[in-house]
Length: 294
Image (cartoon, rainbow, N blue to C red; front, top):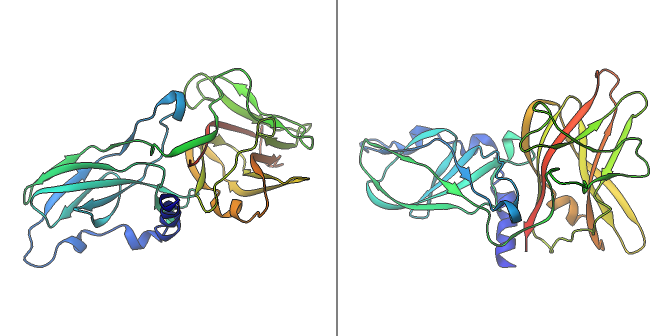
């Protein structure tokens, strides 16, 4: 539980404005000091597909530590100076834009940090190629990549359209299929949920995120259905703006879920209403993951 609380604090304490942590070179260049340099082009994610799903990610920043001292947070790709030389312990954490917002960048709590010994030489640049993975204490109570028969999402009673397995190079992020929601004059409301499955539960005060790849020409909403012993209620609290190309987002469900006391479980909930000014409204989704700690 201590580790989970610590991870939750990371989300909110470290989600600070961009101006605070995209550190300028001047921070590390005091008068009469000669720096070494580190270059990081990208941070790669490795996953075990059978249990963790795709390695799709949108890691935008490197949170860098030397000998456990924070050096800064750098938007990738980055080359930055450090006032160190010789052998030191380097640690790199993967940063993402929480809820897709540049001003709320965080060190993603579910990714394990990368560590290595680095031998720094003054004025020289060392290139580091971090490869990370999910923490072993992470679990995925819901995953859907649309690659197998039987989609884990279905339309609710209030919906006049559903989500369908679609194929085609312009409709699929990776693999052979993605999920498609289509709206027209006869199908104006989509309300999609995972209520055909068992609800997922969340440990108290533990972070929970939804990862999702998407492409859409009109907005849609994402949230949860909250299950109580004798009833349920729905709340779609994130609005996803149109994206002409495939994008990835990390949605923080933690605060919203913690607002519902007495809930016995939760379902994923996606909604959309046809916008009249959009020709052939369509929403494509891939690689849905609910991510939390065990």
